[in-house]
Amino acid sequence: MERWRINLYTIWIAQIVSLMSFGFGLPFLPFYIQDMGVTDPDQLKLYTGILSAAPAITMGIMSPLWGIAADKWGKKTMLLRAMLAATLILCGLGLVTKVEHIIILRFVQGMFTGTVTASAALVASGTPSHRMSYALGFLSSSTFIGFSAGPAIGGVVAEMFGYRISFFIGAALMLIDFFLVLFIVNENKAPVSSTIEELEEHAETNSGVSIFTSTLIAMLLVLFFMRVSRTVFNPYIPLFIQELLSTTTGTAKTTGIINGIIGLMTAAAGLILSRLGDKYDKLMVMKVLLSAGILLSAPLFFLRSIWSFAVVYSIFFFAIGGIEPIVMSITSESISPEKRGTLFGIQGLVGSIGWAISPMLGSIVSIQYSINSIFLLIPVSLLMALIMVQVVNIKMQ
Image (cartoon, rainbow, N blue to C red; front, side, top):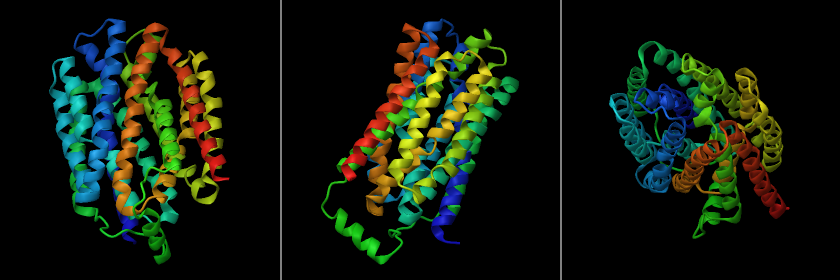
């Protein structure tokens, strides 16, 4: 089997385990801090926003630096660093006694972890350009499989043994993951391309030229709006379910199941829809998927049943799940492999800014109006992404 395929499949498995590790405890932080005495509704919403934004802020600062380090010292090294740091942080989350301790650890998490970006950079650096959409789409499915399996299993574990045990199990899984990557993944030191002509084209195109082209900037804006639309409501799913059920009993298990459904639908999109980017015009595919996302997200504001919400929200995530891999494919194909660590670091920065802003926006909207009012931010964000894609399309005609 080709080395790039061995790396892809190994990292795919590693990412599933990695995101399962995080998913065992992090989705239940609103319940965890209630056990620590935070019961005032407005204070709970505020802390939920802060805990969601904290790692995004520091990750946004560090992502470009880690990207540059990846190009200099190796992308596998950066992935191992992120996994080892995550192991220690998950252990710490299982030991904390105050909300302030969790906030500090979430800031530290953003500084030293980031397995998703590190994995994508490692895969992109060794994948032939004509298989880029497939590889990144396939890899993205691991993120959502892990995010779905983690909360689903973690919710049951939390109900039976408590949230602390969930974090310790996550730390043990992450440590196993570290050794999986250490012993199996072999980073390609030389750029991988389909043909000699492609290598020469990359060298000529990127020689002395800034990576910040107008197309890249537009795609980064699309990535930003996509990250906002994907993450603006997710931190508030536990509180939304708690509000609908009028109790905390069983909410962790229900939250885990719903997160699992959403994750599996998004994983299916990464496997199915992102492949369309290798077969058809990428911008046209993105416009279709964004339009579908807008139409599906619009009714969410009016839904007051847990299971109708779960069905519509998961279908919505399927519709938009193939967009980010196509965005990353477009940007990766425009940059030579030896610069893709820096590129993914920049994309990590932009994605983290969206990730940091969205929960705080959700916090403000939920306090001023209601939790379900957050849903209105989703179609607006997707519309902005659609406009940026159309701008790129007009420019390229």
